[in-house]
Every structure is written in structure tokens, then in C-alpha cells.
Image (cartoon, rainbow, N blue to C red; front, side, top):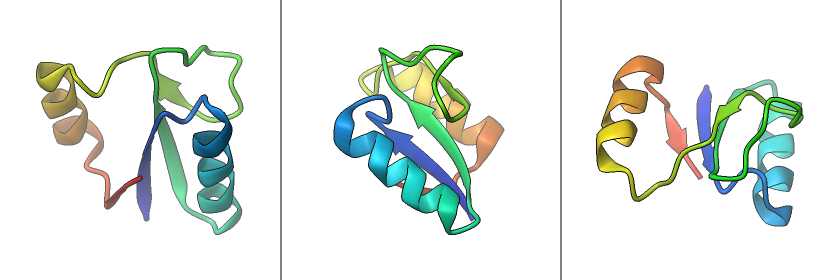
Length: 66
């Protein structure tokens, strides 16, 4: 399952991403504070950027958004 975790660089989001990952799922983090050194792949973008969200959904096609 492909899981898009919003706010995945924060305390709760990072733990949610880790749980999905430990469960064998693909994780992509979306957070304005995401950096390439973070533990999960992601993108530094905002959930308020509707244009980028549409692109991301079309490119990555997540099954779950958390």
C-alpha cells in the first residue's frame, strides 16, 4: 500500500510514517520542513498547494493519506 503522510517531519507524522513503513508499506512524506536527510522519502511542499497536491496524487497515486 502507498501511504502519503502529511506533516511527516513532525513528531506525530514521523511516528505515523514509521508505523506504515514497519508494516511493509511504501511511505512518502509531505511537509514544508522535509529535507533529503529525513528518514523517509518525501517532498518539501504544503498541503495548501492544491496544484502540487494534484500533481503528486497523479504521479504517486497513494492508497492512503494520513
